[in-house]
Length: 197
Image (cartoon, rainbow, N blue to C red):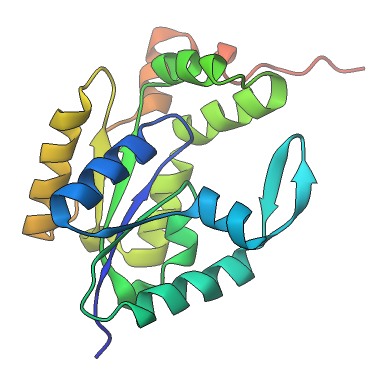
């Protein structure tokens, strides 16, 4: 039987993946695999679009599988907003999906220089649970644990992630950004209606 030696940290850009992954790798004595760095370092992409690398998911999946298989007896923390798309199910110990209130997330993404379509698409992905949905599709709800990072300190999120990994029990459906924003009447600011030309 395959050794389950990967903890996946995924979520929309700006939710706190990199911070949690660094803390978690240190706390678990695990090797950190930052997918963004791996893609850039090993050329696992198909070029640039709007200033971002277009990841070659096939090549990246193959490379991640090689790393995890070569690391027998070693634990890995794999971090990136597409980590759940490249870590094989048979290698997964637990997937942590970080979530963040879109209003707070917008401020973080603006601070990082996100603008226009790129900003809107990432906010919409968070509201529509894209990473969570994909992770559950890939691994099943029993191995996916959702954490809302809104307004929380990194150490607090780390404690919750450590508990989830120890328990090895999934938890999904803790946030409903779509329902919250719709209830407040503020959904239109994230899903603007295009003017017909």
